[in-house]
Image 1 (spheres, rainbow, N blue to C red):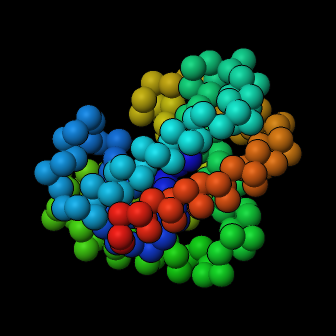
Image 2: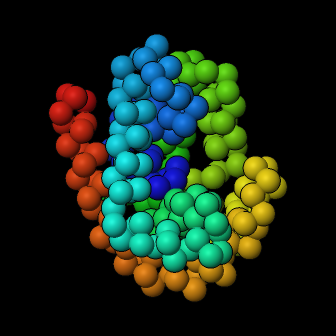
Length: 195
C-alpha cells in the first residue's frame, strides 16, 4: 500500500494519519520520541505493510511482476494499489476523494511541528504536489513512476503502466480481497490502543 491507502487506514485520526505517512522516515525505535498518536500511526503503518507483504495473493502478483520490475515489483505494486483504491473509492467510502484528501492535508499541517525536518519536507511536498489525488488519473500515475525512476535511479519503474495495465484485472481482484482485511485490521488496532 502507498500513501493514499495509509491515509485512509488511519480512519480520520489526525496524528495517526501523520504517523502512517512519515513511518518510513523513522527506522527501528526512533519514533518513540514522537507524540503517542503519531507513534500509533507508525506502528499501524508497519502492520499494514506486514499484512500486505505476507498476503499470498499479493505475493503471487509480485512474482508475476518481477520480470518487468525486478526487485522493485513491490514498489510498483504499492503505487498501483493506490490507483486501484482511487478507482474503487465509492465502494469503500461515502466521503468523496477530494474532500478526504483536503481533510488529510489539514491533519498533516496540524502535526508538522511534531515530526523531523525531513518528514516535514516530505509532507510539504505531498501536499503541494497533491500526490494523494494524483493516483486516479493514468497520466498522473505515469508521471509519478517517471519521477520515481529519476529520483531514485530506478529505471525499472520508468515505463510501469503497460505491464500493470496488462495485469489490471488480476491486480484489481487482489486489491478487492485485500483491502477489507486491511480496513478490519486497522480498525482493530485503533480500537485496541483506545483511539
